[in-house]
Image (cartoon, rainbow, N blue to C red; front, side):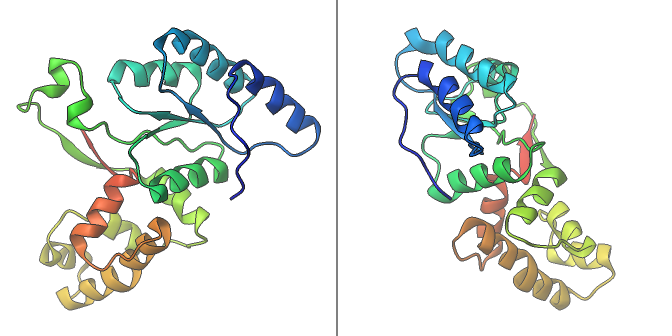
Length: 216
């Protein structure tokens, strides 16, 4: 991955992108810092909208995330957002995902403390775990991993107990544990850049990368 010197002037970004394309060295992903003076909010949205018209992949970095702001950046053409407090592996993973697949998006679940409305902050609102196959496929391409149907099944039903997984796959429990260790954990280790040897760590990585996502 190669990074370029940041541009402090928002109005220079579009001209720079056009120039780079003219030199046949297009930028894969533009990261827009969404923090700072609110007086520049409309300008940031305008620049994001212009970049999307050029079909430029844009990842927005946000310190505080509200549902309505996510809708604003989606409407302006952002392909995803990342939390300012995210780890380097999450940040790099999001960039690789968008750079490797023109159809991919990266919109992870919002943390509860960031929600402004009662609808989202109400603990009584039930949330369900959703499997994002398109994200799994996109991440697999970025690390050169050819997924098997068995692996997809394990990712899809990762929250189930081992015995339940084994019954659903018509396999012995110890075989499923081996599959998790040698295939799923290895996949997540390559993806995240850190050792994944335990199931709860694997679950955290799946949530971090949005492969599994809690939704209302």
